[in-house]
Image (cartoon, rainbow, N blue to C red; front, side):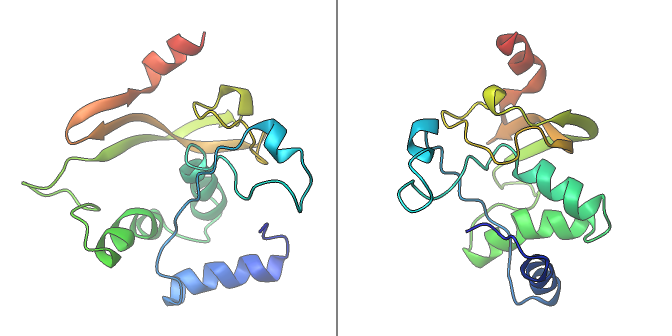
Length: 154
């Protein structure tokens, strides 16, 4: 459900800081626009969230001083990996080299039509955010490169 009240938003941030909430996860639910037009009670839950999660959190938590970059990295990578005993969340010889390079100065608007996901339903359409991925590695191999992605969109 949407977190409309400031009290709910504040409680979530406090919960992250005091350890009541272990980490941040996304529910990437790429429903079509037609599915989401069925009204609140009938439409499927969720939004396209994976592509915009880091820029949203970085802009609204780190840039505003609600959290540090170290906090954000911990909540998004280290804590989930530790919780589920996964070999991720840290750089170490012998572990999978899964990482994303992010340009913290890159600022752009979310354009739902430019999302890679099949679902284009983003309530954040038009929001200006900082901290966009420029390259992603999975097991040491480049699987996403923004320069090539931008060319493909043009």
